[in-house]
Length: 377
Ligand code: SF4
Ligand code: SF4
Image (cartoon, rainbow, N blue to C red; front, side, top):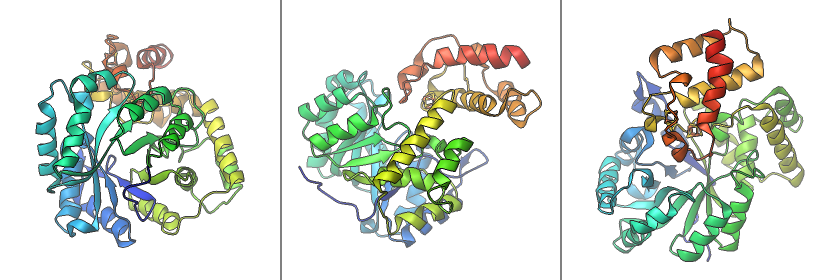
C-alpha cells in the first residue's frame, strides 16, 4: 500500500512541550512559534487528548485553527487508550477533542500508545472498529496509531488490522538498535506492510541535544555549525519510509534551528548515519536512566512522586559527580519539598504500566533512595 496522503515537508510540530508560563501553556508564545513554522510552508501538527490536560489542543485552536483556513494545516489527534475502560467513552473523547481543537474533522486520528500489554484490551473495546467508523463518517481523513510495543506485536496488529494506514513510532539514533525499544525492527515491519511512519521522540526527550562530551565532539567533528538536535532529526528524516518527524518545540531558537535544515532537507550520508549511531552508543553508556521525560507516568502515581525529575537529577549527578553543593542537588531538595520523595514509592507499579520506555521505575526509585535521598537529604 502506498502513502495515501504525503506531507510536503518532513518536519511536524509536536504540541507536547509547548512553552509554559505560571504553570500553564503560554498561548501567546506558542502562537509565535506556530506562526514561524507555518511561514516557512510547514503544515503538520501533532497533539493528543492527554497533552497538558487539554491545553495543547486548545492552544492549537487559538494559535492556528482560529487564524488560518482549514486547508492550511494538518492536525493529528489521539484517542487516549490509556484512559479507556468502556467502549462508549471513545465517542465522548472524540467529541471533546473536536471541540477543544475547534475543527469538524481530524486529518489524522490515532489510537494513542498501543503496545503489547493493551492490544487485547483495545480489541475487547472494539477500538479499531471505532476508528474505522470515524473514517467512514468523515470525522477522520486517515487513521492509524502511535505504537510503543515490540516488532512482533506490530506485525500482528498490521496483519490483523489492514485499516491502520499510518504508524507513529519512537525512532532516534540512540534507540535504533536498542533491544528494548526495537526502533529498527518496528520500522522494518512498517516497510514490510508499506505503511508510512511518523516519528516521535527523534531527540529522545531532549537527551540527544545535551550530549556527553565524547558524543558531542563526534557530531561536531562532522560539522561544527550543525546543532546536536539537527543530527537527531535528520537521522530520522533520512529513513525513506518516514513521512514526518515530530519535534516538540518549546522555544523560538528550537523552531529556527529546526527550520534551517528541514526547509530544504538533505538526507544524511551512510557515514553520517553511522557516526550518529556511534554517538548514541556513547550516550547509552553514559546515561544511567534512559527516561525521555514524557511524564506519562506522573499522573498515575498515588504518591505524587516527580518520577522524571528525580531521574533527571540522578542522571546529572552521575554525569557530573555526586556533589552535595551543586545546583542539581538544590533542585533535588526543592523537589522533595513539593512532591513525594523517591522513598515514598509504595511499589504499586501503576507508573510502569504507562511508561513507553518500559523502564523499571520502582527499581530505579530504590536506587535513587539509597544513593541520593538517604545519603544527602
Ligand atoms: S510504583 Fe511507586 S512511583 Fe510508581 S506509581 Fe506506584 S507509588 Fe508511584
Ligand atoms: S519514566 Fe517512563 S513514563 Fe515516566 S517520564 Fe520517563 S519515560 Fe516517560
